[in-house]
Image 1 (cartoon, one colour):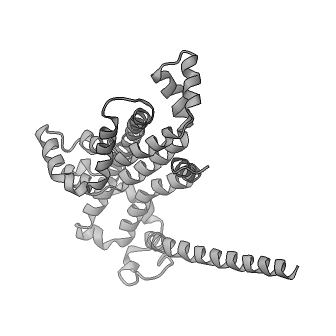
Image 2 (cartoon, rainbow, N blue to C red; image 1 turned 45 degrees about the horizontal axis):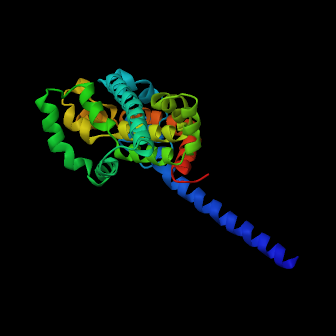
Image 3 (cartoon, rainbow, N blue to C red; image 1 turned 180 degrees about the vertical axis):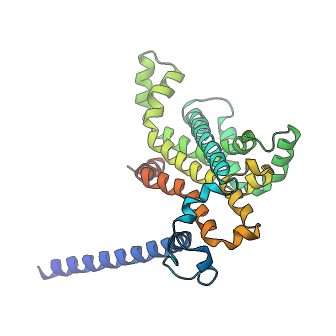
Length: 283
């Protein structure tokens, strides 16, 4: 009994230290967000004197209420919504079809093609900017939604995740459907896609976050202010002296711009964890 009690006490102590470590990690992660919220709720004139506090100085809601009333912030936000939504849907569908083909359909050269797709994971996207910019410029597509969307739809990581998932689905499921007379498209649409929902949600979240936060490609492709996304638009305001000195207004725009990411993560975090565990071979 003494040994058992000792083990229980040791386990409780270990669990307690683990929770303390996690609480410290969460606090460190939340500090920049907390500071941004405090600046967004502070008076701009007061912020010329104090910017280091973790509480609002001269509390006001004017910065948040005026986010969409200055400049083209509303248009930039809309651009990000359009680009991110279409990119996410297109990426998930394309990667799901490619993953099913690589995992289930036997065709000549499948290994070579799959290896070529995965090779894209080793190429930094910055290395593709010059040829990609030239190719888009040759067809006069810059400053359009298509230029902001199409280069991101082909996602090697998404193809890999979906291939891993479909390869773990028992063959009996597909064989039973074929016995009932279902073809490849029927099997893919009616059986495989519903089964792949956790993996597709995980891929959708990854794509949504990366596309919404993308800065370099929109900066290169969108040269007209009306085609800026929220990331490039907010960055452009820092070059405006009047806007850059109004830290409260700038932080309010950053807060509003990051809200969709927080909402998506909070709503779908369970699906994200489940999808990752399933594609990595967990139960």
